[in-house]
Length: 494
Image (cartoon, rainbow, N blue to C red):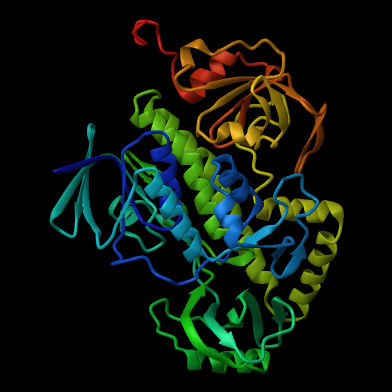
């Protein structure tokens, strides 16, 4: 029987990012997918600031930037949101098709020694105290320590694990096409609301566009087939034109059903990405949320698999990421409502647009959509606890460095600005200790404002701050909580 430490179902962005994180930590991993080969459908089309920061923290952002196109800000139900106000090196949305994101992630995984095995559908599994046996295609078997379902909203893993997926049914459907246009709009991102529905046209590449059209009150069966003629007819009804669409590359449809897994873990089975949460693509949050799930889970699962941390560390994955997905579901439901028609909705929409036009409103909505405001439950006592660490410019004994460069290895970092925190001797195999001089005395934190610098920081591999001297918790306690008990000298072979 074939064996691996972690088996990941689903070769999309979430599964690939998780596999990269595990391989970076030296964990044996295999990605399987029921499809025969990687598809060329564009699917999601943009990466938000926090996702770009996470890729930067792994030193793998450059190829994504080379292929993508930055556009200023984002939107909330079509209402523009300005990201340029936020203190991040990437205050924009990087327009990049999901198909290209997947190919870049798969190339990175190959560099790290991982692979995707196609035409491999999970049909059943048996989980016990010592591991999990997964059956593929009704015959082949793989033994793993953990199975992670990243196989989408209709995937097998969540269903086979018996995890509920409650939520709200679709109230409308949208048709989508990647096409060429003979008469495109003048602007590269064109979004309008009309009497019968709303539509958008986005230029991905010269001559290649994505058109999306939603007709109020129309709900398609999720298994329904749609073609270019139906897309054309719907556009004409709603927009008054089909923009001269021709040569379709992909035609599909989606609804605004919103569902959330009742739990993210059942023993040795975990869920991430669309397998754990589905929602309308309003605001472009789906792929970003899935990649961020993967980075949150990856280092924790690596520590547990390697025996350096207890299984209870995995409980923090659901505690931190499930509320994030719940918030995404709620704000996409709100966006769906705001995209409707009628005098009452118009009044609400005008009110929301006026609020977003203010600095406070823009910052509240913008940091939520971009995920720059996330704060995990890591204690009280300082505004940075549980938040993303700013990408500080530092001076070390080895020369100048950006803080995110210190995270390239995917390891925790104890950053000492002269506090005398000392080297975490019992955690030397898990935590990097860096003494540095900071360039500024105050840090700007999106959603918070400027705060005084801390004397030291303990930063998790996902860039989350989990200890400062001001937190009132002993450093040893924080290290044990997040990275397992200290290694004794005898265990270290000294």
